[in-house]
Length: 218
Length: 204
Image (cartoon, rainbow over all chains, first blue to last red; front, top):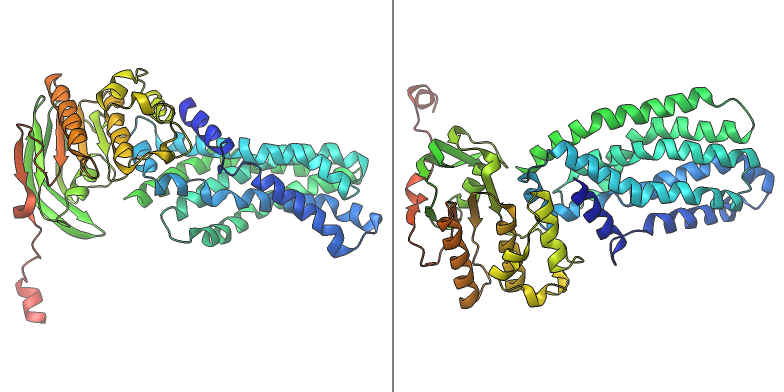
């Protein structure tokens, strides 16, 4: 399992692996927002938590279609399925590798992009915390979507359509934590809800992902 | 480890392709699978490897004793030859890849990225994977595609050495590998459409 994780990380960092694409997308989306809504700093600071959360979510979505599709195309998914690893572990490791190469960099970059949108000072801490708690759920849900659409030609768009509605609860509570934090309100309730969603997806979805992957490999 | 197949029927895309398959694969023996294109050789190998369920019949002999090689080699183009092989070795818990590199003459290519190998070299690397799995039953689907004469010989030697160590192999191939294995032509096991019974006949 460690071997699979290390291989996936190595593949992501090598040329053409796609590491940094999500990060660059996040940066560009954030930079474009002031162009579209105008440069008033009071307006920007109001919408900053929501925009940053939406940007992170879309950046996360961007790299999902490569998550299992590449392994499917070169045949290694079949070979991994016949290896002495449970598929539940394989999909969990895939989700972890996706989080480490996409989710975690987004969490670390978010405060810098917060400056661009004039995020209020108390908001920085809560933005990072909410993304840290919420992004693992996005990777796990995304892996489920990738397992559903693996083997489909042009599955990328279908994957987005399937996954985006599933991201809604995470987005609602995640952005709520960041928004409340930025305005100095109490954040405990949405943060606990967000953590609960993440814990539930991590506990349950790998089984669902492995089950659909088994069907799709037939 | 003996693999025994009893009255097996398999399907592809919901359509039965082969039925009434009975054979056993003893340690030290090779079974060469023959049959025209589309008859279901790949489907049979995938079913035995546990990648898809059988329609009926039984397969005895643990699934986790089987090393399967499909048409595609599962190589990562941005990893080197050694990294590709070492990955599979650690997945299967055998850490020595040197014998596999030697058997398929991959030593001088060891630092090359798999994406820069020729088709035949990739195939050799794919077959070297079988050696690092350390599993006794090999299932090979058209293993000699794009191999030259020397490489086919290398592959046949590797299979012979594997059989000599008490392993077994089930190989779907159209060429003569010079292995003294039993040949099984699955053409005669082609699934026949169900005969029309009285109820259907009356309806029609």
